[in-house]
Image (cartoon, rainbow, N blue to C red):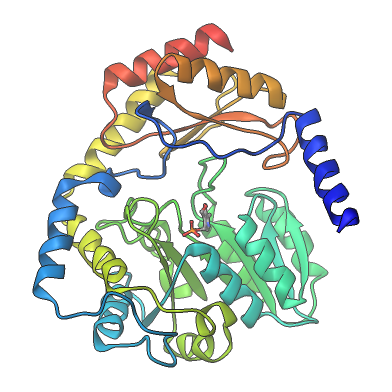
Length: 372
Ligand SMILES: Cc1ncc(COP(=O)(O)O)c(C=O)c1O
């Protein structure tokens, strides 16, 4: 065991040396400018009541009892999936235990050795890991650059896939969806869109950015996650009925895991119900506009009109120092450092929510301006 212990020690020391050591920190009572709970559903008393009332009424088991293909399936889950599909204007939806599981299961099963997945260079790690497991070739194209995508597609072989996010998790900017579809379709490439940071927020009822753009029927698959704006946990892959049948047969992260418990499913169902009240999204939009207005003149701000606003602070140590300062002043905003982002792209990532106050937003920006 000496070899592995030495390796672990050495790897951790390296992380310490360049100030990139990741450590867990327990949630604090600081002002929340860091969570993905964009609409405040994760701690909403209204949502909690809807969930608890439904649990009291239901005669459902505590645990699911097994994987979906064995003991863990029931009518409630199937009806919820149908409801999700209809909500997002699609033929079918299939639930996974998390967005990570969904991307792993989807990419690793639809692409095979000899195929090519062309992914935006900023695509989420779960997509990259799914592609790795698929044994397909992975090309990266320049972030949000349809011309660069085309250059890569020209050299791609096998069945072709294009992987993008609609709102990017680390930059907060939106993909140029129309341009990307136009290029992808010329090469007969299937577009897969991760809507983790758009679901619940964009579209007339939170259907997502691809739905809002009117392109949803042209997507091969969409991913909606429930751990962000929906305030719960889990994810759904949305697409054609045959894709669902295929994933039930071939997506290993769907097949070989215990299905989510009823509590989880009812939370997802009730979170959709909460979206009928548009005031959450309206408050979020107001706060985003206010932040952008107040942050004018901050040259290091990455252009974004979403809930994710990032301020570039070069160097792991500088970014961590600024985040620590903000925390001392009562604000939780995270430093995102290398290797999560490229060197010299280190940043403070500020997540805006429906429940942030204008005065807190203003004070936070003043602290950043004075200390950057
Ligand atoms: C773009 C994107 N896709 C997928 C995921 C994974 O989703 P989950 O947290 O539900 O596993 C995340 C979460 O970090 C994400 O930001």
